[in-house]
Image (cartoon, rainbow, N blue to C red; front, side, top):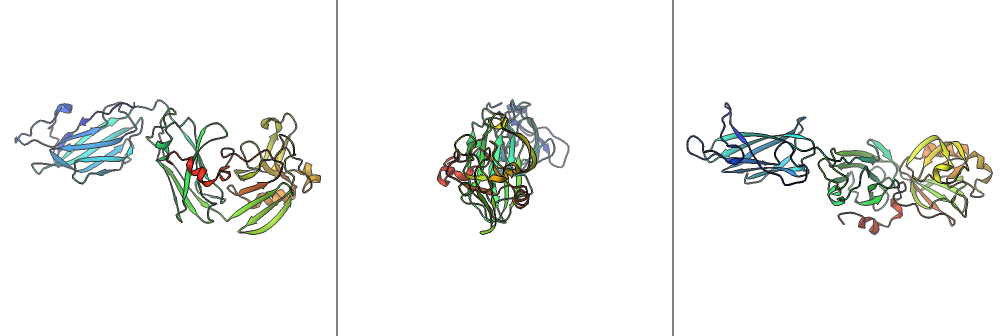
Length: 389
């Protein structure tokens, strides 16, 4: 599949007339009946199991190309550029695996006549397909700390080739960078974030033109991905585990402070610190201590659950801990609050809002791949994680 491509000689059709054969296949062109040699056109790749992952190239000799059209089996065009001298056309995108393409080229030869040439080829099927899970979803409104995140089904050993196909455009020229991480699941992942939190109201589009890109050992991508989202109002959740309180700050103004109880000090039940990002509002869910390595300490339905990490830290209603709210940290690592406070708070926040968590006795800083811990990495270190750095 990844071998060298061969060239196919196209067969010309007389313009605006019945088909007239001139070529001799791959051996070279015949002389035209009047003795003038016609233009010769070649295409790479060629054949029924052509290698994918390279641009389609059409070249002309003995004349010049005036137009080239390449389409897939569904009629979708493969855009490209024609050299100023008409000697070559090359597609901007690479040929995708398992795809049939039709090529139509028009040349002007030394005799001044226009000729139309047609060819077709099919690329070999991918031996392995790499897929992507991406966030945030399209047409969503997110908080100011939401990164763009792509998680891959299979390893990406050619990270530079993949990263070159990723584009982020914003309504206000926000600059940022991609960084390669290891997701909490152990899979390869690449996230994009600005240097600082997003500006409220920013409109963002991410395009991953991956179709036809070889990820290396993980196989080929066979589709593109895109998402468009809007950044909502600036909201920051300040969680002070030493004072056992949570404060919602909107547009720089304190909206409300809530008494909370964080993770129990001195062991595995401590909470994480640093900046965690609200990943999802999951409502009422079952929480079991066995899923986070805490034995059979609890197994209960929990209301107003807001996920902060993949490892299981949430903010949620914890009425069983009411006597400790604002007084002591007595949870199994989550940030608990009363039913009434949780209901109010749940209605205020959205995925992408940052939780800036401080406290003397915690089990460490949220890792970049444990949810969206990107903001716990310094900007120079974040930039250094790019494969194109």
